[in-house]
Image (cartoon, rainbow, N blue to C red; front, side, top):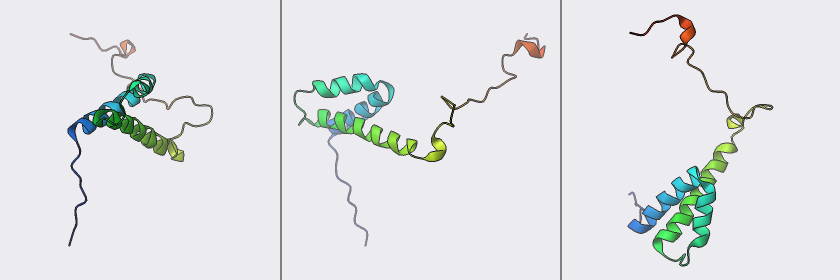
Length: 96
């Protein structure tokens, strides 16, 4: 016999959670500033916003804790593969 433990989430909490997660991902300073500015943190939207930001940080920290995900010593950012033949004028390919 299977029991389902899903609870119905308030739509405003879910909206705030998603907004907090995305804003923390793309603009963490603004997300922190907004989280501090909430006057009523007991509201569904505000508590969802704060929880979404914390969830993003938790997931980011988990990914960074994986050793093969960290940059190699002396490497600031992972190297991106370059598509050498795309838009390369040195290939001698003439466009119509």
